[in-house]
Length: 89
Image 1 (tube, rainbow, N blue to C red):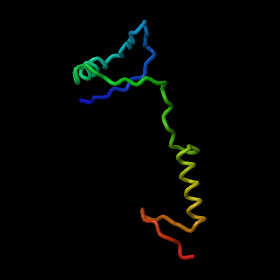
Image 2: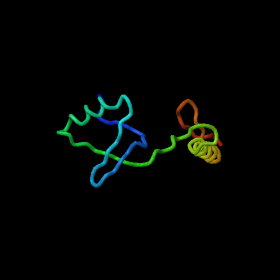
Image 3: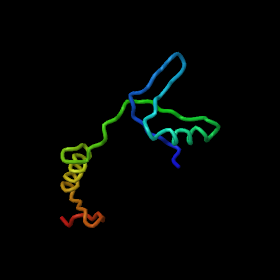
């Protein structure tokens, strides 16, 4: 069983020094298993939900790969079958 749980929710309350999260269906057993380890000590990270990375056309990753490819061509490097070789210019 995993010792990490990722949860995105808007069911959070803060009252004085108490932080409460209403768990969605299906999370209770996993949370209880994590709380049962390490004498109940847990590591909690709170942040805003992040947009997943895009890897499609016009994505940042795709752009960087294309830019590196153009630079390599201009410098005379070519990649074939996972091996890099210098051009015979």
